[in-house]
Length: 68
Figure 1 (tube, rainbow, N blue to C red):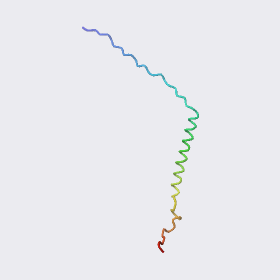
Figure 2: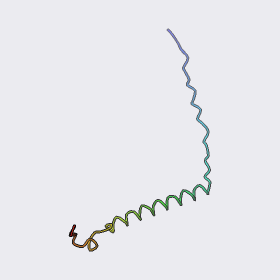
Figure 3: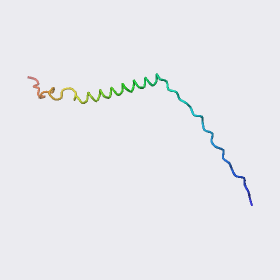
Figure 4: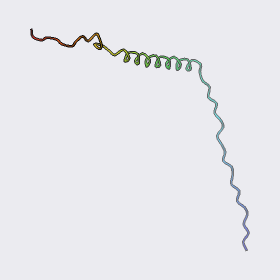
């Protein structure tokens, strides 16, 4: 009869928690950049809603006599 000692596994050692501090200036710059990007997207949508040049009444009837 063979008697063996129980095996004990050692718990893993976890890394210490790292604290990250944010710089207020970095946050302000990121917020301004986000606002600028949002305004540019809104402006782009507004320009495409207008239809661009030479559409509607600006286009006229489209007939031009050439070489007259």
